[in-house]
Image (cartoon, rainbow over all chains, first blue to last red; front, side):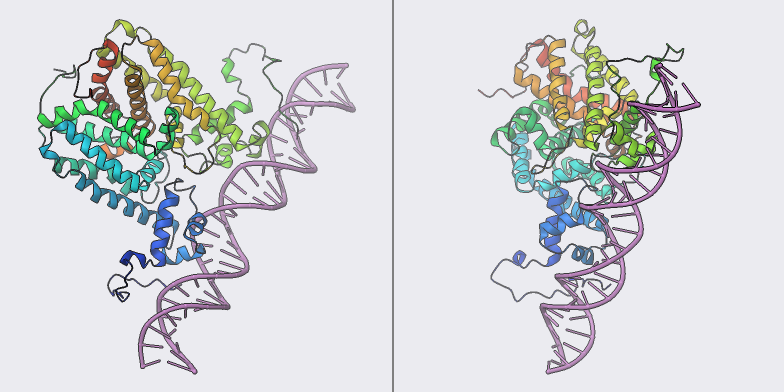
Length: 235
Length: 235
DNA sequence: AGCAGATTTTAACGATCGTTAAAATCTGCT
DNA sequence: AGCAGATTTTAACGATCGTTAAAATCTGCT
């Protein structure tokens, strides 16, 4: 079997077409885009190469021409969506340091939700593949799913000046991520039990209200270093 | 195909054997037990009848004799583990009303963790099957998974006298459940990113600390009806 | 002992899966 | 025009899936 030409080093540009550069969409990109959608709907083992082929409107063996195995494709997809998320996440912090905890947190959530509405796949893919059997082999791209939390924690630490102790910051970011992944990545479930539609303004409003209700006090504690002592100090 | 004898109405007791009643374990129970384990490790579509047969040490078509379809078996499993959880959850509240929010919450979590250590399947099965594709058919037992949150909310409301408004209680229980399902039902993931072992004392200590760190202030607010005003009041 | 029904085993079905091989077609260059 | 290599299509593979049918075995009763 011939291997596909690596079109990185020898960039054979299309003669600067008027339509957007992204418009010139080679097959490989079509496959990635379709795979992102399918893997956002089905966990790794339930998603199939044939589903992706159908979604991309190509014959499914063509996928193996660009990605030798299903595992390779999934890794590429996880890399794609988590990188996208990682880059966006950095921008959500811009200017927040001037705002104080409450309005800063509020604006951060707004930016976050705005991204999630446009790119729902990242959180869904993480949510779908986060739970793993203890005794069995890992899913191919699982290392990247695992890094997801660590990345956001670092971005948070770098962006916001904090006096809180490291443990508190870790507890905060893990809980924020967990709630975000569930409420946005599994919105069908949570909206369902609330009697709302997953993408509706009402539901997103509830999620924001809930995340601020639950996490704002702890955020204040971390940022300003106050010890409000909710009865947690042990000594 | 013959249908299995319903051994509910005509209880053909074994002649009160010395060994425990549960010891007399007909095939049906062996299948349920094996299915609980397999469905706690693999999401619905990834788990197979053959895995369950192997785990129960029976030939796999025998499963179809007791459960006509995989869907029927899964529903039975979800019913089994959520009922078990529901019954246990009620007992965890016993005596808490005398204790005040902090020590009460602490004791509740201890009881909860104790149960989760002995019966890890319920939370794992919920965690594994909670995320659903938006456009496609539901998993067979999904209605019961969905009811899971509603049940615990009602138990909480009945057990603890509260002055908090309904919205606050809903935000609290949903967030508690979400964190509990993730931290205990997907412990492999979270323990992994913390560098701890999923079932270790250290990890469980971290989870408890985190849940109290995040949720105790809100619990106090709900129970005693105080309005501590973390900057959330809007009017 | 012999029967009837319950239970278990064995074999096989059609469907779907990821992957491979080979043929067919397209593309850019001489 | 004709070639070489890249890309796409077609057909098929072995493996696994849930389910069914039929035979084999077990169980309790007369």
